[in-house]
Image (cartoon, rainbow, N blue to C red; front, side):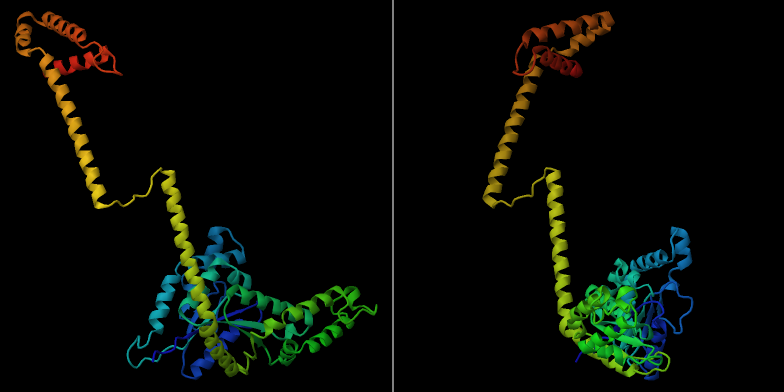
Length: 413
């Protein structure tokens, strides 16, 4: 029986949600279980991390140097650093495959069961960038991959911030097309039961929404004493509509409340990871394979079209295979044509040789009379050739043809 592949857990979350602290907690938990994970840090701007990374983007790139070299701001520096790092993704994947292979360091080596990835706090820089897509697609093509979206629970206690987080989670889910776990962090400060209730009971969210409107949480006329309540204002109507729309979305999510400070809820988180890994193999992997084949087919079709266009531009047609009989007939015809041309050339050369004057006597005459005699002899032969070959070839003047023969005769003399 083949050993199960390690699960890649990609932690994403807004700045301040406790994402790095959560990474440290799950890393510590796995070490306590004698199941050390393989840790990757993809945040180039972080100064210190409370865990040791096996692969750290800061070892390859200096975030401040990238900003200075390309004249970028903080977000541009992070994005450019990720783009440069993504060009080496093949090396990263080769290291991961080698390190996670069974018995890579010997028969007694303990296999790696988890790969945990820390990402920048600027979610859009990672999730919506080309480099982020390359990194996630590369991981998902080799390992079961799960997205852990970290939510700051105390800051999500109002209905509008809660709905904003849910919309963000929905956009990440449909962008990455990977299984997702909602991790409500900081439950030591505020329990996450209210969020779970809002996600499963629409009436409970409606009651909380009405309470926020009456308390003036939205500001303006919607929260004033004008009597508008129960979602009659713009913000209330919008949140009502979104909560109905996201009802189906909630059914495909696993929700876990954890405390990165105390470690509460971490075992439940890894239970959810195991469930999502099975879901990845069952539902997501076939879809990924289908998309990969479609990309390969599209790439081959584009290459074929570009080749056809190039050949048309060069006015070159593709060779058509002929039968052996047609090839032999073509070769025979070609041979006959070559023989005919050779015979014609031989006949022309014979005519020229027959009409040429023997040069020996002229050489003797040149020796006796000098340059004046040579000029008289050349003029005489040119006039004689011009008189004899007048209009001999169609399409060519007699003077041109005679002059050609004259030049050949003088060269041979």
